[in-house]
Every structure is written in structure tokens, then in C-alpha cells.
Length: 503
Image (cartoon, rainbow, N blue to C red; front, side):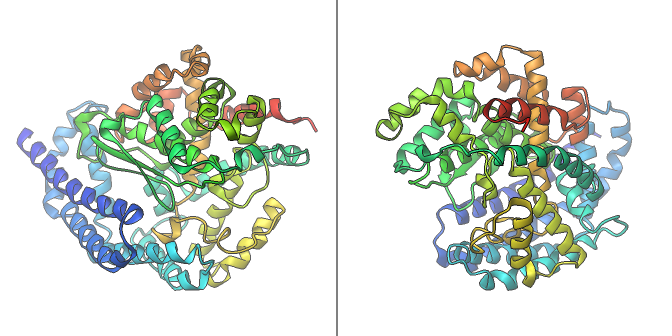
């Protein structure tokens, strides 16, 4: 059995190597590749996608999994070996339902679509990318139909990114959360908004990048296994547990974009760098779900990075980097500026209170598109109508409307967004549990120390990678299933100090 188990691991390493090579090509396309390379890059990534899929769905892997089934049953459920077999079987059974040629087609299409989007968005030209998005929707419906028996056409996508959840589960959580959020949003936005003019000055790019990366390293980001680069839409990518990279974007007339994008992607990277090295190259060597992954980006970006305690320590350093811009700006003014709540256009720049309404809008659109209730050609107008209903403002153009997110232009439609809100909920739940275990964490943050928090997360979450499902790891780490209560309590406490929530 040991020989067969090692043979399986060797085959999985080969699959991982091909996928990592494809990931490197995507990273290059998103950072440094000249536009002229787009057509060839689409072909290259499609070839690697097809090869990776063919190798993983090779019947030989199925035979090895069958042969190892008695061995798996003899092991404890939480042993590394049983977990690897369990997770590999789950992914294998899903992957064999998708033809390799279809995978290559989709990869080729989405690579082309991404390149068109990078040009269409700044040009505010939805019509240019519309045919690609219509094709993406066709592919999305095809992909869902490889998994017959679903309750909702979005279920296969949601299960893929947040295993253990279906559309009905997400809708239930969102409805419960929306009921709590809308009154808070209404109470805050009916009051005078915070003055954030201090953030809208000239901040040289090089200094922004250096400051953000310094904070990332103090969080615990290991630069021996990482680097930071610029891109259109920030992301984290991993080629191995020894090579976990982050990207950011800068605006020299706005301080918040690069800084909080860096902290967000650092949260993702801390998770990946914290995974047990024994899992290298296997299906266990990655985050267990989009929601759990986003819990870490949102925890480090917002719960830590937008906290008053954090800035008690870091604001004097930031002032020393930008003395002309911030030297005369009091800490309280800066703190209110970075936590300004307003009905705004851009999801990635949205405040903590309104952010989830952006996600719910997109989730609802995904369901409607997949169901056939909404056509791509109508999406810009419907986007504006829904945005006005939810936020009381109308996007002035498609660039800051339907074109703003990369997800539909570099992937399938379905399961793309719910992880962000699930991450907000889970981030608060993990942080609350960590503070209960170590009450000194808030005071340590005030002193620029993050080791206790980082160690708790590594011990209770990061090290396990995908060994446990999201529901399992949440219950194991926090003692309860997913709950919105810690998140709502966090928002009410933090923003109750900034605004009158009784109004």
C-alpha cells in the first residue's frame, strides 16, 4: 500500500507542477507581459490547462484511489494520509465529469477575455467585451450541466469554491445578514460623512509600495518565500509553498488603494505560507474554501489593518513617510477617513459596512444570469437600476459599473463572489475566538506585534490547508458553526464608536 500511496503522490506532484507553470504564466500576464503576447499566452495556458486536467483525470489515478480505499478506511479520519486520499478522491470525482477539451477551450477563452477586459475597462467599452462575456455564460451553463442533479444551476460552482454550501445556504445567510446590515447602513449614511480628503493627495508610488510591504512583513509575510508586484486587479498566487506572491495597484492621488490591497493580499498569503510543508504539491496544499481564504484577507486588512490600535502604532511611521501630506493630520481624522462609510461605486474600495451589499448584488446577478432570467446585453442597465435601489446612486459609466470586477472576464460565472461576504463573517468569528484565547492580542496590535494572533491562526487554521472542509475547520477552530453574530457585534462596536447607531 505504501508503494501505491507514493505512486499517487508522485502523480499528484506532476499535476501540480503543470498547474503551477500555468499559474506562473497567468501571473506574468497580469503583471509584466506586453499586450502583444496575449494570443500566444491564451494558447499556452490552454495547453497547460488541458495537460493538467488530462493528467489528473487519468484512469490510473482512479485505479490507485480504488486500490487505496481499504488503506484509507484503516486510518484515522484526521490522519494526513486519509485526508489526502479523501480530498483527492473528491476532486478527482468532480474533475472526471469535465472533458479535457472543454477545460482547454475555457482556459483559452478566459485568457483572451481577460486581455480584452484590461483594455475595455479603461476605455469604458462594455460592447467590446460583451461577446466574450456572452460566451463565458454559455461555457458556465455547459460546465454546470456536467453535474446533473443540482438543486440550482449555481450549486456546482458554489460547491467548488465553498464545499458544503449550496445556493439556498448562501441566500439564507445573505438574507439574515442583510436584515442586520441595512439598518446600520441607513443609520450611518443618514449622518454627516467623514472627511477623507487627507487620503486624496499626492502620495508617490514608490513610498506607498514600500510602506505597505513593510507592514506585510511585520504581519509575518515571509519575503524569502514571497514578493510583491503591480497589476490591474490585485491578487495572491502560489506556485509552491515556497513561492507565494502578492500583487497590488497604486493611485498616486489616493493612499488607500495600494495600502489596503497589499494588506488584503497579505492575509491570503499568510494562509498559504502557513500550510504544513508536508502537503507540498498535493491537493491539501491550499486554502480549504473561498470563504475561509477571504476570512484571512478581510481579517488582516480590516479587523487588524483598519483598527484604531493598529494605527496608534503605525500612523507616526506613515506620517514620517509622508510628512507634507499627513504631518498635520491628527490620528483621529486619519482613522475616521480610512473607516469612512458611504454609498460608493467600487466594491474593492467599499467600506466594511456597505461592502457586503456589493457582494449580494453580484451574487444575485450570477444566479439570474445562470437561470436565464437576465441577459448579458441587459446587464449594464440592470446593474444601474439595482445599484440605485441598493445604494441610492447610479454609476456614471460601465467602467465603474459592470466592468469593474475581473471575475467574470477571467473565469466562469457562478460562485465568484459569495466567498467575500462569507469571509467577512468568518474573519470576525476567527478573530473573536483568538482574542478569547489570548486577550492580550488587541494590546499587542497597538504595539505593532502580531505574533500571537499569527501563531493562533497558524495553529488552528493555516497549517491544515485543505485537510478539513470549511464547516469542519470553522467548528474545530471556533467551537461553533458559521455565525453572523461575531461579525455584527464587531461592526456595531467599531462603528458605534464612530457613528450614532441608535438614530
